[in-house]
Image (tube, rainbow, N blue to C red; front, side):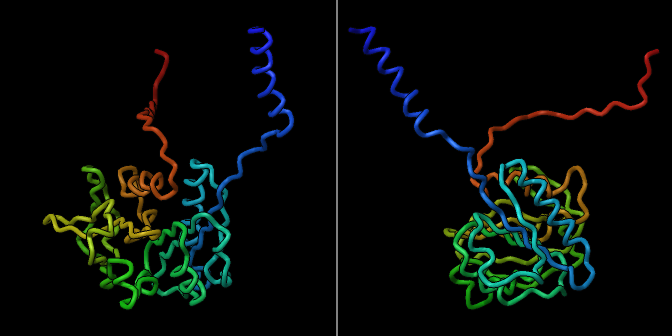
Amino acid sequence: MRTARALLLLAIPAIVAAGAPAGPPIAKRALILYDGTSIGHLEGRIDAVHIANLLGHFGFSETRVAVEDYRRGDMAPYDVVFVAAGAEIAPMPETLIHDARTFTKPLVWMGYQLDRLVSPDDADRRSFRVEGYLRESGYLHVRYKQTVLGKGSGDLARIAITDPARVSVAAVAIDAEGHELPYIVHAGNLWVVADVPFAYVDEQDRYLAFCDVLHDILNVPHGEDRRALIRIEEATGK
């Protein structure tokens, strides 16, 4: 009897599995919007490639669209939306701004025209305001998790937190005197990066902070894997 029960228990999962084969997991979808196409600012397309390459690590499928080609409602089907606004004077359609304001899933805005997304009328809801942009400032480093990283440009949005209880600051920009400004900000579904972290990037850049914060943005908590890459040159067998 015990043997028969054991065989029956083993058979039930097999029958269920045979009757309902599991399909491949459905990849979450990301929309990457980039600016600059209409004014010949090619860096926008490159920024989108950077984001797409990073999303491959998290199992997201991605679609890249120039902001000029955005149509009302385009972002609705996606699980996360990235806006790379690296060109200050590039047109940003009002339809995109409207949809971004009402989007409820994770939205990542980096660079310029953040003041259009978070207007003064919307500052109370977002719990921060945008006080213009600094250009060629002394904020040339970013501190993230007690690590100081480089920042190849002094340009950044000047963000002021109005309700610290509702906003978290993941990284701060710092200058030589130790003054700080929020660099990566999380408020509700909105994640803000005060510049485009792919500009003037090097091997010890704030780009690394953005890469790490992506785990929180996408809610994919990979375990830490502390590996090092060693490059050996001009070695001979002598």
